[in-house]
Amino acid sequence: MLNKLNNSLFPYLGFGLGLRSEHYETILEELPKVDWFEILTENYLVPNGKPLQILDKIRQHYPVVMHGVSLSIGGSDPIDMNYLQQVKQLAEYIEPKWISDHLCWTGVDGVNLHDLLPLPYNQQTIDHVVSRINQVQEFLGRRILLENVSSYLTYTQSEIPEWEFLDIISRQADCYILLDVNNIYVSAYNQCFDPQEYLKGIPVDRVGQIHLAGHSNKGNYILDTHDDEIIESVWKLYCDAIQRFGLVSTMIERDDNIPNLNVLLKEMNYARSLAEITFKELLAVNRSS
Picture 1 (spheres, one colour):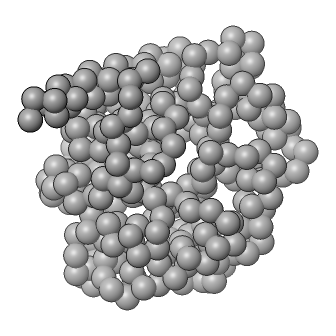
Picture 2 (cartoon, rainbow, N blue to C red):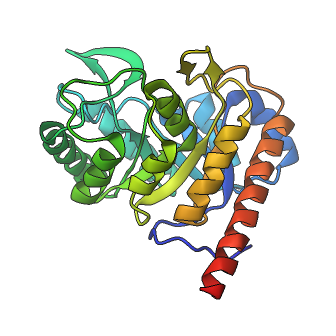
Protein backbone atom coordinates (compact mmCIF):
# COMPACT_ATOMS: atom_id res chain seq x y z
CA MET A 1 0.00 0.00 0.00
CA LEU A 2 1.29 3.40 -0.91
CA ASN A 3 1.71 5.94 1.86
CA LYS A 4 -1.23 8.32 1.90
CA LEU A 5 -0.53 11.86 0.77
CA ASN A 6 -3.66 13.66 1.90
CA ASN A 7 -4.04 16.71 4.10
CA SER A 8 -7.38 15.51 5.43
CA LEU A 9 -7.37 14.06 8.95
CA PHE A 10 -9.97 11.53 7.83
CA PRO A 11 -9.01 7.82 7.90
CA TYR A 12 -8.00 6.23 4.61
CA LEU A 13 -9.76 2.91 3.90
CA GLY A 14 -8.69 2.28 0.31
CA PHE A 15 -11.18 1.19 -2.38
CA GLY A 16 -14.70 -0.03 -1.80
CA LEU A 17 -18.12 -0.77 -3.26
CA GLY A 18 -21.68 0.06 -2.40
CA LEU A 19 -23.24 -2.94 -0.66
CA ARG A 20 -26.25 -4.15 -2.65
CA SER A 21 -28.59 -7.04 -1.87
CA GLU A 22 -27.93 -8.58 -5.30
CA HIS A 23 -24.39 -9.34 -4.14
CA TYR A 24 -25.01 -10.55 -0.57
CA GLU A 25 -24.62 -14.24 -1.39
CA THR A 26 -21.52 -13.81 -3.55
CA ILE A 27 -19.80 -11.65 -0.95
CA LEU A 28 -20.41 -14.12 1.87
CA GLU A 29 -19.39 -17.12 -0.25
CA GLU A 30 -16.33 -15.67 -1.97
CA LEU A 31 -15.12 -12.85 0.36
CA PRO A 32 -13.88 -10.76 -2.60
CA LYS A 33 -10.91 -8.44 -2.29
CA VAL A 34 -12.74 -5.25 -1.35
CA ASP A 35 -11.26 -2.89 1.23
CA TRP A 36 -14.65 -1.73 2.58
CA PHE A 37 -18.36 -1.43 1.83
CA GLU A 38 -20.73 1.52 1.95
CA ILE A 39 -24.28 0.75 3.05
CA LEU A 40 -27.42 2.76 2.28
CA THR A 41 -28.42 3.74 5.81
CA GLU A 42 -32.17 3.55 5.25
CA ASN A 43 -31.96 -0.12 4.20
CA TYR A 44 -30.74 -1.20 7.65
CA LEU A 45 -32.82 0.81 10.10
CA VAL A 46 -35.23 -2.04 10.94
CA PRO A 47 -33.89 -3.76 14.09
CA ASN A 48 -33.34 -7.49 13.57
CA GLY A 49 -34.41 -7.18 9.93
CA LYS A 50 -32.92 -9.60 7.39
CA PRO A 51 -30.65 -6.94 5.77
CA LEU A 52 -29.17 -6.16 9.18
CA GLN A 53 -28.64 -9.85 9.89
CA ILE A 54 -26.72 -10.22 6.64
CA LEU A 55 -24.76 -7.03 7.33
CA ASP A 56 -23.71 -8.52 10.68
CA LYS A 57 -22.03 -11.34 8.77
CA ILE A 58 -20.43 -9.09 6.17
CA ARG A 59 -18.97 -6.64 8.67
CA GLN A 60 -17.11 -9.48 10.34
CA HIS A 61 -14.85 -9.37 7.29
CA TYR A 62 -15.03 -5.76 6.04
CA PRO A 63 -15.15 -2.22 7.45
CA VAL A 64 -18.40 -0.43 6.62
CA VAL A 65 -19.53 3.19 6.33
CA MET A 66 -23.07 4.58 6.38
CA HIS A 67 -24.51 6.71 3.56
CA GLY A 68 -27.99 8.21 3.95
CA VAL A 69 -30.48 9.91 1.65
CA SER A 70 -33.07 11.23 4.12
CA LEU A 71 -31.34 13.78 6.35
CA SER A 72 -32.52 16.76 4.25
CA ILE A 73 -29.87 18.94 5.86
CA GLY A 74 -30.93 21.92 3.75
CA GLY A 75 -34.66 21.52 4.23
CA SER A 76 -36.99 24.00 5.89
CA ASP A 77 -38.75 21.37 8.04
CA PRO A 78 -37.19 20.69 11.46
CA ILE A 79 -34.62 17.90 11.53
CA ASP A 80 -36.46 14.58 11.84
CA MET A 81 -35.23 13.53 15.28
CA ASN A 82 -36.94 10.14 15.06
CA TYR A 83 -34.97 9.36 11.92
CA LEU A 84 -31.78 10.75 13.44
CA GLN A 85 -32.26 8.59 16.54
CA GLN A 86 -32.55 5.53 14.30
CA VAL A 87 -29.34 6.52 12.50
CA LYS A 88 -27.56 6.94 15.83
CA GLN A 89 -28.75 3.58 17.09
CA LEU A 90 -27.62 1.86 13.90
CA ALA A 91 -24.22 3.55 14.13
CA GLU A 92 -23.81 2.48 17.75
CA TYR A 93 -24.61 -1.08 16.71
CA ILE A 94 -22.53 -1.52 13.53
CA GLU A 95 -19.72 0.95 14.39
CA PRO A 96 -19.21 2.47 10.92
CA LYS A 97 -15.99 4.26 10.11
CA TRP A 98 -18.10 7.32 9.27
CA ILE A 99 -21.60 8.56 8.41
CA SER A 100 -22.49 10.61 5.33
CA ASP A 101 -25.52 12.14 3.64
CA HIS A 102 -26.15 14.80 0.98
CA LEU A 103 -25.89 18.59 0.92
CA CYS A 104 -29.44 19.11 -0.30
CA TRP A 105 -33.10 19.12 0.66
CA THR A 106 -35.45 16.21 0.05
CA GLY A 107 -38.94 17.39 0.96
CA VAL A 108 -41.18 20.00 2.56
CA ASP A 109 -44.14 20.03 4.97
CA GLY A 110 -43.44 16.45 5.94
CA VAL A 111 -43.58 15.15 2.37
CA ASN A 112 -40.50 13.26 1.16
CA LEU A 113 -39.99 13.97 -2.55
CA HIS A 114 -37.49 11.10 -2.83
CA ASP A 115 -34.99 13.22 -4.71
CA LEU A 116 -31.79 15.07 -3.83
CA LEU A 117 -32.58 18.70 -4.58
CA PRO A 118 -29.93 21.45 -4.79
CA LEU A 119 -29.84 24.58 -2.65
CA PRO A 120 -29.45 28.30 -3.39
CA TYR A 121 -25.88 29.31 -2.62
CA ASN A 122 -26.09 32.40 -0.45
CA GLN A 123 -25.45 33.56 3.11
CA GLN A 124 -28.95 32.78 4.33
CA THR A 125 -28.62 29.16 3.21
CA ILE A 126 -25.12 28.93 4.70
CA ASP A 127 -26.36 30.07 8.12
CA HIS A 128 -29.32 27.69 7.94
CA VAL A 129 -27.33 24.64 6.88
CA VAL A 130 -24.42 25.22 9.27
CA SER A 131 -26.84 25.46 12.19
CA ARG A 132 -28.49 22.18 11.20
CA ILE A 133 -25.17 20.38 10.69
CA ASN A 134 -24.11 21.48 14.16
CA GLN A 135 -27.36 20.07 15.55
CA VAL A 136 -26.86 16.74 13.79
CA GLN A 137 -23.19 16.38 14.70
CA GLU A 138 -23.86 17.20 18.35
CA PHE A 139 -26.64 14.61 18.50
CA LEU A 140 -24.60 11.90 16.77
CA GLY A 141 -21.46 12.73 18.70
CA ARG A 142 -19.33 12.71 15.54
CA ARG A 143 -18.54 14.74 12.44
CA ILE A 144 -20.38 13.77 9.28
CA LEU A 145 -19.58 13.97 5.58
CA LEU A 146 -21.87 15.74 3.13
CA GLU A 147 -21.95 14.95 -0.59
CA ASN A 148 -22.30 17.36 -3.49
CA VAL A 149 -25.37 16.42 -5.52
CA SER A 150 -25.98 16.49 -9.26
CA SER A 151 -28.04 19.48 -10.35
CA TYR A 152 -30.18 20.39 -13.32
CA LEU A 153 -31.11 23.97 -12.40
CA THR A 154 -29.74 27.04 -10.66
CA TYR A 155 -31.41 29.57 -8.38
CA THR A 156 -31.56 33.29 -9.07
CA GLN A 157 -30.90 33.69 -5.33
CA SER A 158 -27.45 32.09 -5.60
CA GLU A 159 -24.62 34.53 -4.95
CA ILE A 160 -21.57 32.26 -5.07
CA PRO A 161 -20.61 29.11 -7.00
CA GLU A 162 -21.30 25.68 -5.52
CA TRP A 163 -17.67 24.93 -4.72
CA GLU A 164 -17.31 28.09 -2.65
CA PHE A 165 -20.56 27.25 -0.87
CA LEU A 166 -19.26 23.76 -0.07
CA ASP A 167 -15.95 25.18 1.16
CA ILE A 168 -17.65 27.63 3.52
CA ILE A 169 -20.13 25.06 4.83
CA SER A 170 -17.44 22.47 5.59
CA ARG A 171 -15.26 24.96 7.46
CA GLN A 172 -17.96 26.76 9.43
CA ALA A 173 -19.72 23.53 10.44
CA ASP A 174 -16.44 21.62 10.89
CA CYS A 175 -17.74 18.73 8.82
CA TYR A 176 -16.18 16.77 5.95
CA ILE A 177 -16.93 16.43 2.25
CA LEU A 178 -17.91 13.34 0.32
CA LEU A 179 -16.78 14.43 -3.12
CA ASP A 180 -18.80 12.81 -5.89
CA VAL A 181 -16.66 13.20 -9.00
CA ASN A 182 -19.42 12.03 -11.33
CA ASN A 183 -21.80 14.61 -9.83
CA ILE A 184 -19.28 17.35 -10.54
CA TYR A 185 -19.07 16.20 -14.15
CA VAL A 186 -22.87 15.98 -14.51
CA SER A 187 -23.48 19.42 -13.01
CA ALA A 188 -20.67 20.98 -15.03
CA TYR A 189 -22.15 19.55 -18.25
CA ASN A 190 -25.68 20.66 -17.38
CA GLN A 191 -24.71 24.14 -16.20
CA CYS A 192 -21.70 24.84 -18.46
CA PHE A 193 -19.05 25.44 -15.84
CA ASP A 194 -15.45 24.17 -15.70
CA PRO A 195 -15.14 21.06 -13.47
CA GLN A 196 -11.48 21.93 -12.90
CA GLU A 197 -12.54 25.19 -11.30
CA TYR A 198 -14.81 23.18 -9.02
CA LEU A 199 -11.95 20.92 -7.90
CA LYS A 200 -9.69 23.90 -7.27
CA GLY A 201 -12.33 25.46 -5.04
CA ILE A 202 -12.67 22.46 -2.71
CA PRO A 203 -10.48 22.55 0.45
CA VAL A 204 -7.91 19.74 0.41
CA ASP A 205 -8.19 19.17 4.16
CA ARG A 206 -11.94 18.45 4.09
CA VAL A 207 -12.35 15.65 1.53
CA GLY A 208 -12.84 12.33 3.32
CA GLN A 209 -14.35 10.14 0.62
CA ILE A 210 -14.87 10.03 -3.15
CA HIS A 211 -17.77 8.56 -5.12
CA LEU A 212 -17.51 7.34 -8.72
CA ALA A 213 -20.52 6.34 -10.82
CA GLY A 214 -22.01 6.17 -14.28
CA HIS A 215 -24.74 8.36 -15.77
CA SER A 216 -27.06 8.70 -18.77
CA ASN A 217 -26.19 11.29 -21.41
CA LYS A 218 -29.36 12.59 -23.06
CA GLY A 219 -27.55 14.89 -25.48
CA ASN A 220 -28.27 18.36 -24.17
CA TYR A 221 -28.30 17.23 -20.54
CA ILE A 222 -27.07 14.39 -18.32
CA LEU A 223 -29.07 12.39 -15.79
CA ASP A 224 -27.26 11.05 -12.74
CA THR A 225 -28.67 7.53 -12.97
CA HIS A 226 -25.91 5.35 -11.45
CA ASP A 227 -26.91 2.62 -13.89
CA ASP A 228 -23.95 2.31 -16.23
CA GLU A 229 -20.16 2.13 -16.41
CA ILE A 230 -18.03 5.14 -15.55
CA ILE A 231 -17.05 7.09 -18.65
CA GLU A 232 -13.52 8.15 -19.59
CA SER A 233 -14.10 11.85 -18.85
CA VAL A 234 -15.11 11.02 -15.28
CA TRP A 235 -12.05 8.79 -14.87
CA LYS A 236 -9.90 11.70 -16.04
CA LEU A 237 -11.58 14.04 -13.56
CA TYR A 238 -10.93 11.44 -10.84
CA CYS A 239 -7.21 11.50 -11.63
CA ASP A 240 -7.30 15.29 -11.39
CA ALA A 241 -8.98 14.94 -7.99
CA ILE A 242 -6.25 12.58 -6.77
CA GLN A 243 -3.62 15.08 -7.93
CA ARG A 244 -5.27 17.72 -5.75
CA PHE A 245 -6.41 15.73 -2.72
CA GLY A 246 -4.03 12.77 -2.66
CA LEU A 247 -5.27 9.25 -1.99
CA VAL A 248 -8.82 9.44 -0.66
CA SER A 249 -11.09 6.49 0.21
CA THR A 250 -12.90 5.79 -3.06
CA MET A 251 -15.93 3.68 -3.91
CA ILE A 252 -17.99 2.69 -6.95
CA GLU A 253 -21.75 3.37 -6.84
CA ARG A 254 -24.27 1.34 -8.85
CA ASP A 255 -27.94 1.70 -7.94
CA ASP A 256 -29.74 0.40 -11.03
CA ASN A 257 -29.03 -2.11 -13.79
CA ILE A 258 -26.78 -3.78 -11.23
CA PRO A 259 -24.32 -6.18 -12.89
CA ASN A 260 -22.44 -9.22 -11.66
CA LEU A 261 -20.13 -8.36 -8.77
CA ASN A 262 -17.07 -9.06 -10.92
CA VAL A 263 -17.98 -6.14 -13.20
CA LEU A 264 -17.93 -3.73 -10.26
CA LEU A 265 -14.76 -5.27 -8.87
CA LYS A 266 -13.12 -4.57 -12.22
CA GLU A 267 -14.17 -0.91 -12.05
CA MET A 268 -13.01 -0.66 -8.45
CA ASN A 269 -9.60 -2.10 -9.28
CA TYR A 270 -9.31 0.25 -12.26
CA ALA A 271 -9.92 3.15 -9.87
CA ARG A 272 -7.22 1.74 -7.61
CA SER A 273 -4.71 1.49 -10.45
CA LEU A 274 -5.44 5.02 -11.69
CA ALA A 275 -5.18 6.47 -8.21
CA GLU A 276 -1.90 4.73 -7.42
CA ILE A 277 -0.32 5.71 -10.76
CA THR A 278 -1.44 9.31 -10.28
CA PHE A 279 -0.20 9.27 -6.70
CA LYS A 280 3.23 7.97 -7.71
CA GLU A 281 3.50 10.75 -10.29
CA LEU A 282 2.51 13.25 -7.60
CA LEU A 283 5.20 11.93 -5.26
CA ALA A 284 7.80 12.19 -8.01
CA VAL A 285 6.88 15.80 -8.67
CA ASN A 286 7.02 16.62 -4.96
CA ARG A 287 10.46 15.01 -4.61
CA SER A 288 11.87 16.95 -7.54
CA SER A 289 10.49 20.33 -6.44
